[in-house]
Amino acid sequence: MKTVYSPRHRLHADNQELNAGVITPAFELPARVDFILQRIAAVGLGAVIEAAPVDAVAAAAKVHDAGYLRFMADFWKLWLAEGRTGPTMPYVWPARGQRDIRPQHVNGLMGYYSFDGGGSFVAGTWEAVQSAVWSAVGAAELIHGGETAAYALCRPPGHHAGSSTMGGYCFINNAAVAAQWFLDHGARRVTILDVDYHHGNGTQEIFYRRRDVQVVNLHADTAVAYPFFSGRADETGEGEGEGFTLNLPMPFGTAWETWGAALDVACRAIEAFGPDALVVSLGLDTFEGDPISKFKLTREDYPKIGARIARLGRPTLFVQEGGYAVEDIGHNAVGVLSGFEGA
Ligand code: SP5
Ligand code: ZN
Image (cartoon, rainbow, N blue to C red; front, side):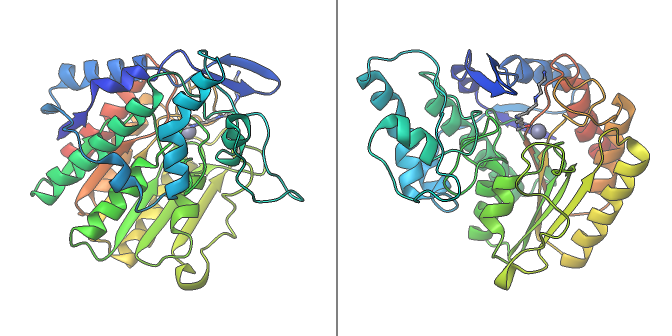
């Protein structure tokens, strides 16, 4: 399996996040990619290709709001104009009872276009964000060209990014962009299977009213886990999209027996939908050693995920999402991909 990635991901570094009352260095680190690349080389997974530049804004505009994309493109300039150079963090949001109205000042814009404090910019963030889109589109092109599967090693991740909101370390929804790219290049139906520990709220929102993209999510129960405000089993889509969203929330402590059974339920729903292409939002934060998560998957479980997905027999694009046990992420990510190849 070929990997597409851009070294520009590294421009997004030294940012921060807000967690339970404290601002901490971000868990989402450039070293994650280094460990994955090391492991790809160690097992000889396949060629690693540097993503060619594409018009990331044009590709993203199919699934994101134009004003939101303009905000991200202009953001650093606005921040510098305030005399600031350090990492950013939104701090006021239009919650219930307030107006859905776009402010002018950068402090207000950050809140308007985010849902948490995880959308933190540094000087190079926008360049890195665009380069992740290059990787997603580049890997989708490989599949369009006849590859059975490909791996978009995207950073920053994307599945929390909604049509007009950043958060959860995500800015542009790389998996959603790729799914739309497949539709625009001949696919009639696409499934996004999200195996990240956290509910992919952004992906769900983007496709909630559509029947051409099925969204299937396995995640920690959002009654008790981030991102809290979506991801319940009773969310099944709306209007034309009714029945094309499937949420499989699981309790803290979930290990392979339960998780693997949920994957099987997910796969049967995907078979029933019959997609022309499958996009896997590949998070490895279900790992027992993950520092911010509470599932108990082990290194040995990841190849089983890949093997089960391979049995679907669809052209499959893996898109990197979360996973914060940095020294294990290479084994776990490449475990899924090798399991897919070996199946
Ligand atoms: C892409 C992705 O996996 N984003 C995850 C964003 C999670 N952000 C909030 C997590 C809160 C967990 N806080 C744990 C603190 C550990 N000391
Ligand atoms: Zn996650």
